[in-house]
Amino acid sequence: MDWGSKIRELRFAEGLKQDALALEFGVSQAAISQWERGLSDPPLPIQDEILKRTRLAPNVQMAEALCCSVRHSPHPACLAEFVNGEFLLRICNDAALRDYPLLSITDLDQPLEGKLGQDVDCNMHRFVEAGGFEDRLRCVRVTSRPQRDGRSLFTQSTYTPFKVARDRWLVRADIKILAHDDRRIEFAPAFEIDEL
Image (cartoon, rainbow, N blue to C red; front, side, top):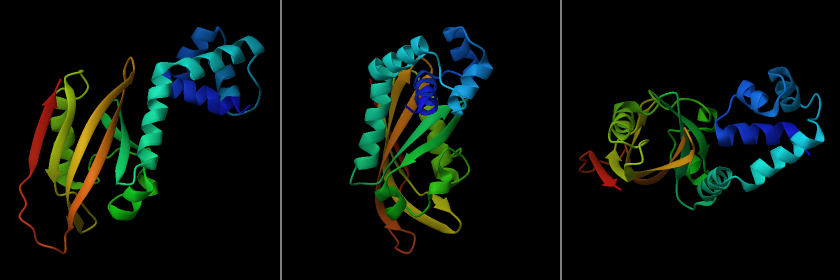
């Protein structure tokens, strides 16, 4: 068993830092760090607890289901996590990397703000202000013009928030590319909220 991966999965799913998990298990933060780096294995009772919490936790199942649905979508889709006031790009499926040339694999686990232009930044801020992480929205539909490195697209996207732990939110972005910047289209930015 790769205990390092299992512990990271548990911490990610429950939004815990190493010191908080160490406190729960009654061990030092250094022990958690050693287990995550594969330098040693946790004791059997802790192994059982890790397996129980990763196997049965609904938030872990929700996060895994979201990751799977994004990876296997035939259309461009991404999954971002809202961490400390920033959107971090966690997953881009193959269709997004192929058809949405403004993102690359090097953008994973990096903040999105400032990467895709003013339209996208404005939409992310409006999403937060509209209650995207306060259980007030089903989804938001946006029409925008993302830009990067002199290239731009015209897109319609749906941002859907999912609360997967006490203070952990994931946002699924489903993207429809209307046109690349080499084609001229009638364009009007839009931001439509579907509230709960």
